[in-house]
View 1 (tube, one colour):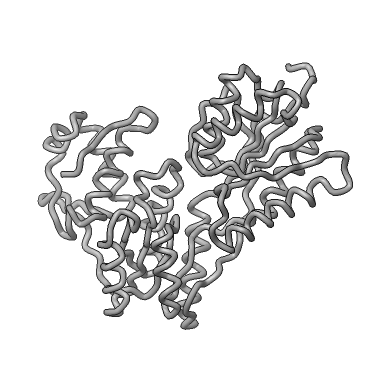
View 2: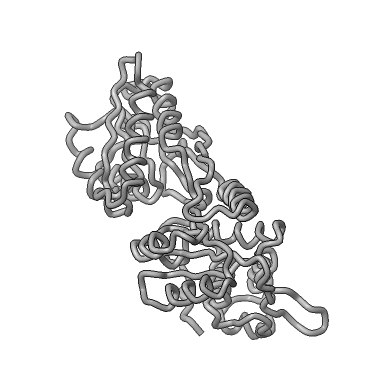
Length: 359
């Protein structure tokens, strides 16, 4: 059995459910396999039977297992009729953001409603097995299309080399509209010197990345047009270490410090919040923070953050609707899905302009 290590930041029953899901997805627990009894699983994971029961309920909801009265609990067998390949460039369970496990959960919930079945491939960067399996399944006709999540370099090259394959990505955010909405909100709150931290890495390897960055810049420019505010868009990276190091270096100097920052990447924002706490800067007295947040992400923030959020259930619904239409029309190659603009959910991290008296 693959090793299980519990962490404190997430409910234990969800961690166990994810671990069992990973064993099922990887084939360690194949279709039709009978799971150990609840008491046996409780001993295996060193938890109570109640916790195991809750974990199994999550797997039932995700349609990974089924309970058969008087027989036991079994890995659900999936017919290979309308099979869609769900390809993760990296292991979704090891990603810093909770978005990818949630996308996986939503795909497993929503595909049966459309008479689709999933075959999952992940971690293209760690070896050739996922790449070999996907290529074989496409050649045999078992897989009708590919949904590419958190594209890695290897997965991107593979899709570029197979223009006959119908494929799309589940995430298509309207970066221009999302950044514009966020900066306009900050301007309405009275902030005039606004920094936008891009959702992109420092090096823009792909043309679509460069296009996303132009969209962010355009959205910020449109938001401040005709006002006294200025908004600069910069790239820090995509890790919490990037947010911590870049944020600490910039905000330590009062002369360079903006009034407000829109962080368009939730993982980067976690690092920035730590930097602000170490610098002794108060939110929003010293600086306002607005962040893009993936659904379910938790922040160690002293005040409730104002966020821009797109629910993963909505992402997957739009993705599958687009994919179903593409298969019906026989569309090959990359299929663009409608862009979604994030919803702005006010908190208390942007409600006072700098220098105003806190209430």
